[in-house]
Length: 254
Ligand code: 13P
Image 1 (cartoon, rainbow, N blue to C red):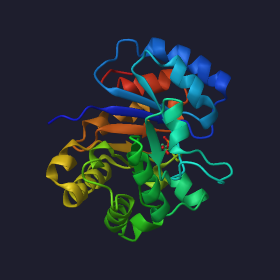
Image 2: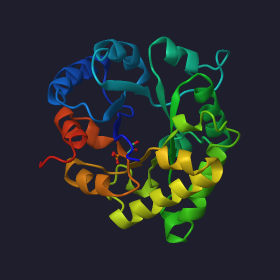
Image 3: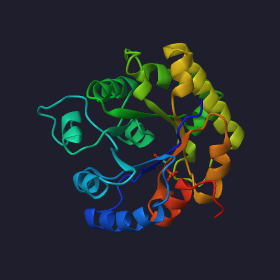
Image 4: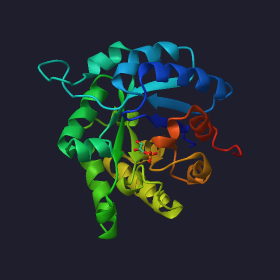
């Protein structure tokens, strides 16, 4: 069964609301004819509500970059699943490597977030990936298996289908150093196999696994051709509407 491609933009801490508005205007024009794939943009929290309004009648979906696992409470600075739902957000990136490494999120917290998102019907994009040191010491498979297993612990098989996995090798994020096609396919096939063990073959075959790490218009087509790659999670190259539109239309010549 062919999985529907998902091209996702993670804007990280870039773009004000007015910059987002001008991007959306240009981007919608550029992806006017696209209908056979999913497009997601995850802007900063302050842009979410307005962006959902602007994209309401388009095929572009809006996602959040993070979320806390409690519904409400004394958690200064945090955003809850209910708040995301209230502004029309139905997808959330969880466990991005910058959250893990700069903000010390561990697998346990990430797992609680995944469970909370699913409980509220929000699709989590669970990010996993090894550091350079882990790769060089031969630990990549073990790290990916552990992050996946811990991230999906106690997740009901009924709802696990809503999970999207993003494989983002830490050493390839924002470095211009993309993983090789062999490294990507190897990691993705391992992730699919592991999901099969955890949740069954049917769910594994249907799960979308995105690659992230220095994806750009010049390399996206080859990456998207890999058997177990179903999409991309793009940072830097998504910040320009023309560049992200080229990534979305990955089969076309650039
Ligand atoms: P870059 O595309 O800038 O390498 O970032 C990847 C990423 O972290 C997406 O979540």
